[in-house]
Length: 260
Image 1: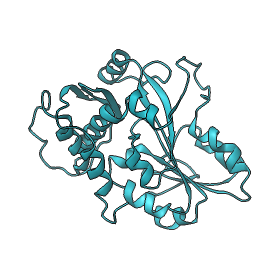
Image 2: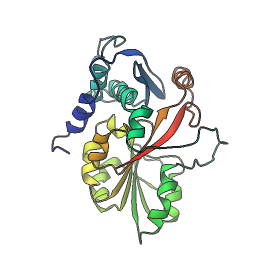
Image 3: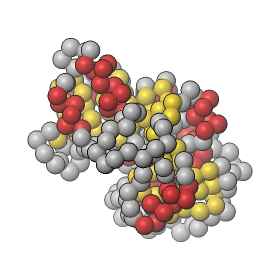
């Protein structure tokens, strides 16, 4: 990747054709979506950042590439829509198929069940085979404490929750020592992704979550496994965003993995 932190974003934005237009979008409480002529993309809603005025443009009918450029905004709500716009282009079966994507089954599971393509469980045999493996997880994911059963675990979280968590500035100290790193896709929204990938360059890196942009540029930037999702049912995804409810894997979204 180019030495400038914006290189990854610029490449992702440039890869979207100028003629594809935005049809609809919504910044939701927990999730957000952008629907374009190419399809729908979602992202986790990231809040905070710069307290600058909101971009006044109404993006409906404008080029999707223009909306994707919001990913560079320091107002994280705008960046959320920018990443969702990128996913409206890159999160399409015809593109992910070309990258050799593997898809989870479209079925609902009981609460608390672990999906077959859970990013952490998929990597578990490889981690267990590494003596004294050091694992760093950026973002406090559900059930992340399971990793502590078979590896040395550090969780980086902006708002520490329990004894496993370290404040996110600890990334400068622990990521260079990691054997395996799991990085939330929300780091693309808050702009920490380029630095985190640089720090984790000696680790096996998996980027996790619906905000992950499954594009070649991300794999070339140091991500070995992009464990994201594609929108399987736009109506369900739209309802989840607008109702403020949970985003269902197995119906609204389909877990998808591409590897470098």
